[in-house]
Structure formats: structure tokens, C-alpha cells
Image (cartoon, rainbow, N blue to C red):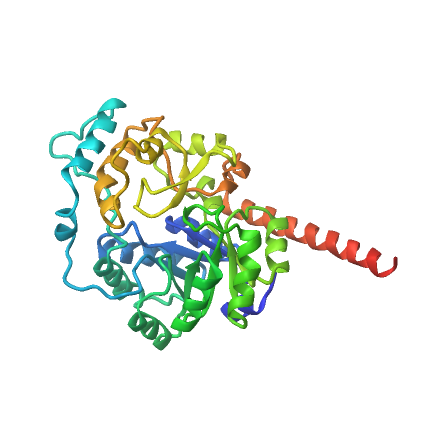
Length: 370
């Protein structure tokens, strides 16, 4: 499954796997793809350095990358405390009411409040880059569009390719004008932050908009035949995220959440602002329904919403409160019906790709002789 981009990066298969789990990212690279570690959950630089050290020891010399979340415009002098102070008390009370309604236990006295979602604050993302550029990463991806110009220059000075996610051809063109190297065309079906255009429409539009820049197709891809379709539409590879959540290397810390993912169908997700303040596809739960209810206060803009709900989400996950328990995931969740090792997933993808290509070749052959 070779393309010009995969050959440039020295990988066997043009499969780029985004994941928050170092063990999954390393396994993707070892399997012949390109593992991309999501950095948004790292609030402390030493934690990211620890996991990049681990990856260096477990990728068997294969290339890998990092995904950050930062705005294109540089903003200085705004601290987490400043942002916290902008959160209205009414929204804080709404969170307390939802948790109380569903009987979510309070944290024990002295217990840490849990993971703070601060990775999309610019100063945090920049501290992550200070760490990452000390490692031989080959790709820097930004989930909020083109990174600031100085970050692009810094990456290019280190021979690091820069990728940016786009939900429309217009966004893709803006990324190309900003000087990025790869556009990730993320369709409506994708998990996490996503736009309103489906992958089948978006991928060729993005390809046409930015040629000769390579485009990776993302959203609704979880089989070899879907990869073949993406390449037929002009993509130079695929960007897969949700598919790895139920791999044995993933560390969700919640058997109940894994069971929900395995049981979910493709219609059990929703684009909601409940988690971050921007539309993000995730499992539909009573938590998303509460925030999407017109009678409620509505989600705050990013990054206020993420800071507001971080502790609540940590408590929901810790106590595995079934009706509230969710995670970002795409519509491909309907295909995620069993726990499998990353290598097994890869083998299934590559075999399915070969079968799809053979089928198209047979059809094309019959057409020429008709």
C-alpha cells in the first residue's frame, strides 16, 4: 500500500494512526504504518517526555509523529487561571446538577481532581513542542488547522513535515497557503472535532484544491476496501483514529467504556459541543443530551468548556457511570465489535485492501474487453 508520501516517510503502508496511547502508536509504526501520538492530554512536559522516551524504545527504529492542538493565531499572556475565571457560575452549577442527578460520587478528600484538559491552550502546546523537537519525530499534526507560522518554520528547520486537519476545501487551501506539507481531509463521520462534509465528498474536493500537496483521507474509514476507495479518490493515505480505541494495546482505564464501544452501532454517535466547546463526534450519552438540550445553558466556547467539564469527565470515567460514560469516536464504531491487537487490525486492513484492488482490477479488465 505504497504512495509517494509513504515512500517519502519510509513506511510500508500509507496508514497513519492517530491515538492518545503510546503503546498503540508504537504498534502502528511497528506494523508498517505511521503512529501519531496525540499530545492534548499531556499537561506536564515531563509526562510527554516520559512517553516519547518509551516510544523511542518500542518503535524498532520506525518513524512516528505527534499531534497537538493549538490555534493558528499566537496569543500570549493568558493563563489557565485567567481562562478559569471566565467560566460562569451558572455553568458550574449545571455540571454539579447533572452529576448529582446521576449519582456520581464526589472525589475523596485530598484526592487529585483528575486529568485537566489543557493541551489545547497555546502555552501548553508550545511546551509540548519544546519537548517533541528533542526527539526524531517525522511529522507534526495540528488538529485546529494550520499551526502558527513560527511553529511551521521551526518544524521545517528540523525536517519535520507539518500536517493540518481540514473539514472543507476552503480550509485545505488556507493550510496550503500557510505552508503546511500535508492536508488531513477529515469528514463528517470522523470522531472528535469534525465539520459537516462527508468524506466521500470532502476527499476529492480537498485533493483538487491543494494538488500537488498530499491529502490524507479521514472519517468513516475502518476497512481495507474503504482505504482503497480513499486512494481511488486521490488521497495519498488514510488517517485513522477511532479504530484503535478497542485494540488490546489501548489503555482506556474503563472496561465499561470498552464494552459500550464494542456494543455501539454506527448511529450511536453525535456531534456535540459537550466535551470541548467545538462540535466533536462522540458516543451519544445522557451527558451529551444534557448539554445539547435547548433548556440547558449550552456549551461554552473552547477552551472554557474543556476546562469546565474536565473534572466531571474524570469522575464519570473513574466511577464508570454507565449512562454518562462516553468518549470521542467516529461512526466507524459500528465495525469495532471485538478487541484485537493492532497487528491483527493491520493485517485485516491490508488483506481487505488487496481484495478490493483485485476486485476493481477484475471489473476494469472485463470492461476493457466488453
